[in-house]
Image (cartoon, rainbow, N blue to C red; front, side):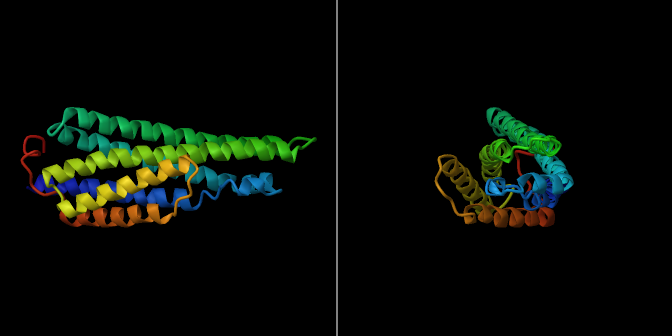
Length: 228
């Protein structure tokens, strides 16, 4: 029983770490497609270069922590379904790779700005086009990463629902949040405008879920008796 509770608290603390480094990486990134249309786009990128590098570091740390969560939970999910366990870990692995791709695009945008700033025949229109493409690389990869994230977490929450390791209302709430994120991200990929509230509700659920895990841990369950 003690080990089961501790497992849940460990997962909760890891998720708290994800939020702690993930939120700054999102809030302080400060790059958007509208920014690419400004005449001083090069100067803005150069001024924010160090800040962008730190947000990229935070982003990759947060994504790597998700893979740690996946590795810890893998053996337990296998007791319910081996295929589901490997799909879960596979989705998180591809999620991390997608995040890395988006972050590399941001780093190359900094390099692009530095190169253009040294050019004697600076072509602002060309930089705007190239910079816009780099920003869109991040936007598309970010949406795909949200689809992968929501898919992986839906499987995790389904396992927790079936094993009753957390209250079922909490697991159902989380799965509904994941479906909303998944749907909203696909709608944006197809050019349909989506309110940010579609994503905010996931944040509310996530904070509540983390708080529950840190305070209560996982419930005792027969699925874990052979693995904890």
